[in-house]
Image (cartoon, rainbow over all chains, first blue to last red):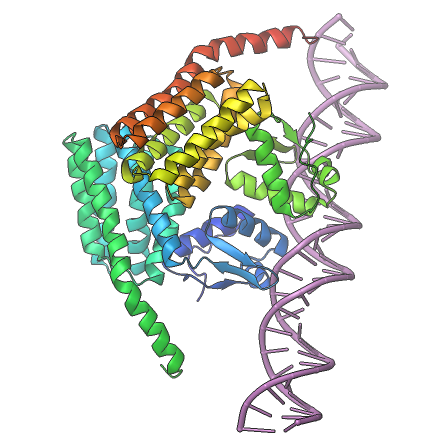
Length: 231
Length: 231
DNA sequence: TCGTTTCAGTTCGCATACAATCTTGCATAC
DNA sequence: GTATGCAAGATTGTATGCGAACTGAAACGA
């Protein structure tokens, strides 16, 4: 894998952090991937110190974990952890809509624009952009509803969700996802907050259910890979 | 101020992190307080490196912030930020109750035990323990409802809330708070999830409203302090 | 007396150095 | 042929050093 794209220089440790989150959100780095300090230091042209600072923050955000004297790794949630993460997202997003779902016209407008961008990325078959935008919709929703705090929390939870989906091969169709985003906006525009909350709940359960179905397949695939090393 | 109590040694950077969170939760360190790297390094008997690692994580958790080449400071939220934090808490906690509020008997039992501990701390006039337990109730709720992810998020949000309350002198009475915790448990025990969510919303709004009322007082007090430095 | 400037002290920002531990490949014994 | 032990290499964990920037106070001038 490479940490390509976004070739900007600047070298603060926050930049490293942002780049890794973006790479995870856009599916460029996979769960379980090793992030060596030295390697990252060379990629970003800084010392290990700054890399470690970024790692510490990412660890606090639940995106990477450290194995003592072995290295840093992108999280690889167990099925139970995956379920807990998705439960938390449902709680947070349903609660968000219920408690401050009354969006104004500009909210709706911003969200519609976002979904348009999603569709464009899907049409262009731009996997990275598509993955990023589909996840970022929820962050965008929190932002436009006026809650930067929830937006920050959702940034981390959606990043984890993308990793979970990658891990468990949850193939919740991108098109379908985008369509679900759209009906949520419809409900918001109609002022029907409970319906929006219900749709959001359903939307997130779709991801969770996909996880359910694919889990056995994934384990079988792993077994097959273990027994047939040429595969 | 001192970072007294809990005299345990062990010296990993996580311990520093935990100690500072506990100190904030229990009201032992105030918003705006300076946390010098050198000072903390001496207190914990480690090098600045480990202190910085702890600070990076606390920064990611929204508990401290850094002012370039001036130092680390416990967050001092503006009124707007305070409101956003409390909004997020309401969304999160209401959502939590709505989506997974069906607690079993053991949940209720654990929560009752917690409230008993709150009352004991209030009776003993143990300010630190009282502050800690009143905040930790919400973390406990998330844990007993089976969501470690939400518990972790709430740990940070309640810590921030304690700091906000300290900053804006929100004197939401401890006794009253504990009583509100109790009626929430009652509703949960009765299986009336919507009522529990409503009560939680109200409970958190109490904090927010107290913030509203006391704001002017706080500014006046600051002004007074500024004019009368011996006060 | 008040405002400005300068200078010394303090503190963080970042890199580097060294120690501890883990991995890995190879040699050796059974 | 397989397993075991060992040593070299690689990687993280922690401390330390140095430079830059900020603070505060003293000195200076109006």
